Every structure is written in C-alpha cells, then in structure tokens.
Image (cartoon, rainbow, N blue to C red; front, side, top):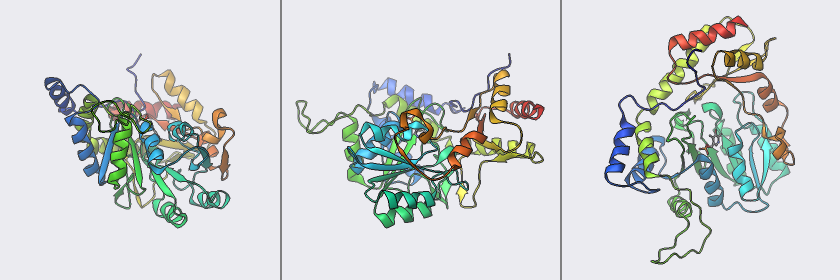
Amino acid sequence: MAEKIYLSSPHMSDEGFEMEYIKEAFATNWIAPLGPNVNEFEKEFAVKVGAKYAAAVNTGTAAIHLALRAVGVSEGDIVFCPSLTFSATVNPIIYEKAIPVFIDSDEETWNMCPIALEAAFLKYPQVKAVIVVHLYGLSADMDKIMAICNHHGVTVIEDAAESLGTLYKGRQTGTFGEYGVFSFNGNKIITTSGGGMLVSDNQERIEKVRFWSTQSRDSARHYQHSELGFNYRMSNISAGIGRGQLKVLDQRIAKKIYLLNFTSKSWKNYQGLNLLPINHWNEPNYWLSCITLDGSIKPLEIIEALEGENIESRPLWKPMHQQPFFEWCDFIGGIVSEKLFNSGLCLPSDTKMTDSDQKRICQIIKGL
Ligand SMILES: *Cc1c(COP(=O)(O)O)cnc(C)c1O
C-alpha cells in the first residue's frame, strides 16, 4: 500500500533548529517545566504575533482554561462561543462550572456570526466572556465582533489554536481580544508535540497565569498556597521544539497556501466544489484545505475513497449544539454550522506532501 498521507502531521525544520535547542537543554540539564527555552519561546512568540506578553503552557486547552480564570469566569457564569469548533474551546468552560451558550456561524467566514452574537447579548445581557474562534486558519470578522463586545463591555478571548500566522486586516489573530490562545498540538501548523500559549497585553494577568500554571506557589521557602494551582507549565524540551518551529512558521504557511492553490487550480472547472471562504480582509494560514460540496457527491464518499488509498481526510467539526454532551446548552442562530458540517470536509493538508501526492488525491476525487 502507498505511504500514508496525513491530514496535517508534525514537520520539523530541515535545518534541525529544534534539535539544537533540545541538545542545549540536555547539555545544561534543563529537563523541567521551566528553563531558558520556555522564557525565550515566550518572548520570541510574543514578538512574532505582536502581543506584549505570553505564557507558555502544556496545551492549548490549558491556555483557554487559564484565560477563563484570568477573566474571572466562575460557577454559573454565561460564556458565548461558536458552535462550530473543536470541543477543546468549550470544555474549559465546563471545568469552571460556567455555562456555554453556542453561537451559529456566518456563511461568509464560517466563524462566529455577528448577527447571532448580537441576538445572544439580547437574551443573556449578563454574559461574562466571549470566546471567538478562528477556524481552520480563517479569521472571524473581528471589527464587527469587537465592536459588539466592546459595546457590551464584555471581555473577548480569541481561540487562535488553528490560526497562528493568520492576519485580519494586517494584524495577527489572537491579538484583538484581551487574551489570545494558541496550540502546538501535533496536528497544528507548528508543533511542540503538545503545548499552548496564552498572549495578552496585560502583564499582571499573564504573570498570574504563570503563577497558577506552576501550582500557585507563594513566595515562601516552604510550600505555601493561598490559591488553587494547576500543573500546566510547558516543559523546557517542548519549548525548545517550539523555538525551532517558530523559525519555519512562514515556510509552513507558504506551503499551506501552495497546497490550497493546487487544489483550487485542479478543480477550477468542477461544479459543486467550493473552497473555504476567502475574504479580502483575511490572510489565512490555510491550516487545512477545506471544501464544501453542493452537488450529488457527499463528503463521506470522498473521505472513504481517500481512506481506501491510505489518505487521511476529515469532516468539518461537528457543531457543539449537536453533541450529546452539550445537548442541554442553548444555541443562538440558524442552520449555518449544521449545513457546513453536513456538506464540508478537510482535505489532506500536510506540508510534507509533494505535487504527485496532490495529483493522486485529485485523481481519486475526480474518479468519483
Ligand atoms: C487544537 C485546538 C484547541 C486545543 O489545543 P490543544 O493544544 O490540543 O489542547 C483548541 N481550540 C481549537 C479550535 C483547536 O483546534
């Protein structure tokens, strides 16, 4: 069987940048959830995205969790978030015993619909925080969303786990809200095997997040705690990988653009195949090449045909309001997220793919 083609798999630099940082960590015995790579990764990352401060943690999910705590979300609070997302956006709301309210997508962006968001504010004026997601590297319409949230005086957390490097009107996603969250899980555009970053211009809150992420140890010789702690800090080894990966982020984005353009050219003349929405104000990182189908062929047929050839593809995220675990939660909007789920899929978008891999994929799909 032909070698497996992945949706999006880890891709270390050809130059071996990551290994240099890891070797240094070994040589100096910094094998711990702290160390020089962690500090430097935070600084380099903050510069890259244009945020003032950054706290490195062991997952993107942990970064969302601590962002919610930094906002002061607690039991019974309402938090708005999009329905079309990965469950990691929502789970931390539940960790804090707060209540998610799901917002529908906008067809023009696939992300949080500003009209549905406005309607949600009417129904829940007491809402404590809004989590905006930039799905598949596409930016949400941040001018509209920030205007609504600022008008209501509610804090915005951006889940930019999938959109590192994406620009909205020239500015990095993750830097519009009070907090921005990034993920370095193995499938993301750059990876540390597992890891996350929380960015903010609020120094005091970022320092607090670092404190919480290392078990909330008060400055005393003995172990003294006046707050609940978490073991969420990033390891010095992971941070070394992250520093190396950050150097090739622009290369990875360039390749993702190349992959999508290849798909787009191959299918110029095919009716019923639509690429993800590309708005003039958006410069996506094209993390995954996503399409929707409105002809007779169904996403599952493509997924199964590719699977038969050892090629990985996936449906779009299943909306949270359709998930058994979140059935009890309110949903504001129409059928956009549901329609996207039913008609869309993510094609292989691995940056290690060659032109012949892509031709093979197109041949299989055209065969249908
Ligand atoms: C990957 C992802 C996360 C969580 O990141 P982890 O590092 O895997 O915990 C959160 N939100 C979205 C939208 C994601 O895709």
